[in-house]
Image (cartoon, rainbow, N blue to C red; front, side, top):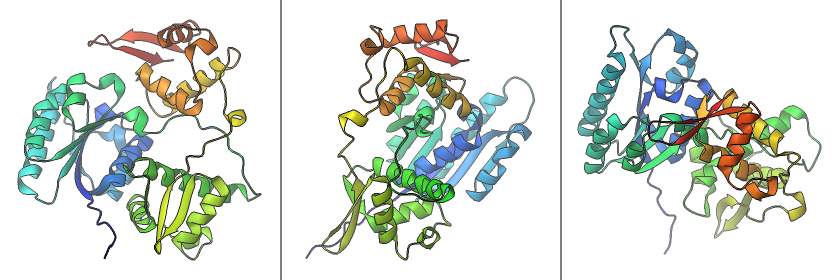
Length: 337
């Protein structure tokens, strides 16, 4: 007799260095979304809070985060916040047996000993940081690491054709839901998951979700509706269980957008603007290249007249869109202008 596989949800404690993450509302929401896709957040704390972060109050309160304020005295306040984060994380690790996973939003190498201790206790450690502030030592110490630029999905979206005529507001609402479900499925290590599991994750991300608000009596009917309209979701029955995955059929070669010597600057400028709108001042060029490839799968430097991606960066610098810099680890960064 076979039954459903029992999915073990991770139980997270999240510790956020506000100075490191940039402290923007969309960025913080993206971080929380990334963690909630993986499991429940049982505890959250943010460090370095001051009055300039007042716009974060609603997000922090609705996710029951504790705020550790930043007291302005002397030159050691940042170090004090780092020490407090380490103390709090270790206290949680030793005292709260329910928590098996930690998310540390910082790229500071000072946290490497903390990561090592947590891993030695059998805890999973997810690190998240801006690419400009991420230490290679910290990145490699974590069980998993994500750049904030990638977590926020700040790539320019390709235009898509709608299969029917609907009101703009209705299409926007359902398009947002469809993108969220696709993001959840992309994070899975399986080709498809149970619809009930997908709905459970959706409710962690959007506690007020109700399929009736989208004109559907059941979640299954809503999935079919989104699948028919946008084509991203694959929905089918498997021994009376509804399974959901992502369609891999792809687009026809004619419909895949192409970058040429004539249009590549506009595409890169739009992507850079998306980063700036997301609150980023600098990014690693590898992040930019990955997002360009996401939008233009056939992208190749030679097709737009360059031998290397670094040559593209130099041209963007000449065009006044970026400034090419090298950090302390001799890693190339681009400052967004």
